[in-house]
Structures are given as C-alpha cells and as structure tokens.
Length: 169
Ligand SMILES: [Zn+2]
Ligand SMILES: [Zn+2]
Image (cartoon, rainbow, N blue to C red; front, side):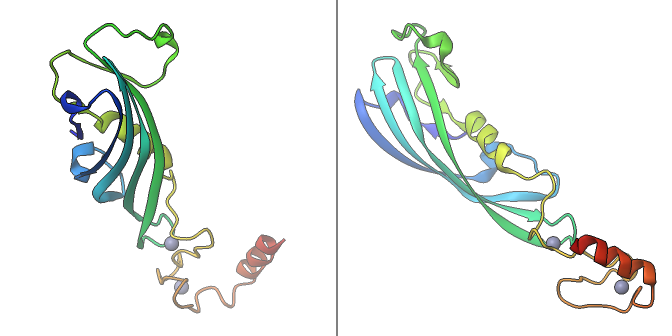
C-alpha cells in the first residue's frame, strides 16, 4: 500500500512527497526487480469529496539484459493523474468521462496509490530488456560476453562473416 493521507488533505491545493518501499507495489518482474524507494511528488487539489491528484513517479529498475544477461539499471519516470472521490457522490457531472477514478469511503484516512502507480510503471518496462541497443550479447559458441572481449569461435567460418556483412547493410 502506498498511502496518501486523504483524511488530512485540506481543501485547496497541497503538495506531498512520498517515498514508498518498492515491495508495496507488488510488482513482480520476470527478470529483475524495482529498487527502493519509489518516490512520488504529488500536487493535490481538493474540493470537498473531490480530490484531484497529479504528479510524478520515479523509480529505478534493475533488469537482466536479454542478450548478455548482465544486470543493468533503468531509471523510470512517469506522470500520474487520478481522481479520488471521497464518500460516494462527487459534484463533478463529468465523472463518467474521467479516467483513473479511485473511490474511498467518507471516513477513510488513507487512499492506496499502489495500483495506479504500478500500472504507470509497468508501461515503462521493456518486454525485451537490453543493457544497450547495441549489446553484442554472448557468443553462442563459447558463451563469452562479446561486449568485453572477443573470441575465435567462427572466425574461420565464412558463413559468419557473411552474416556480419548482411547486418551492416
Ligand atoms: Zn547486454
Ligand atoms: Zn566464442
């Protein structure tokens, strides 16, 4: 749970900086993890039970490169925008058109931002993580990391040379 103290948010404008433990997001990465903290910088505008929250989310993911298997870190930064409706009725007539609406009961002290934050961060995570666009990966012959050294596998092999030429084109 990433808590925003909704019970104490005053009418009008206020600002909140929240640092949350990455585990609160319940985000399972196939090959990596999120580092803590996940930071939120939020501008909150409240009018009665109608609370508009917008701001930035920052986090860092440690991922395994899908070519060379090395771990690398990726900075994630995204914006977050959501409406929080406290206690049923909102006076916004256009409520149905709003995206990202979170409803909490009138007496609630906290609103949980974990779900919206998680979905914003998920969009930023690559399906095929690469430490670098030009990562050369591991040699399929000997397994050496071709980014740091070279090997003699296939150096006498004409087919491999032609492959390399084809890539240049
Ligand atoms: Zn790599
Ligand atoms: Zn090799």
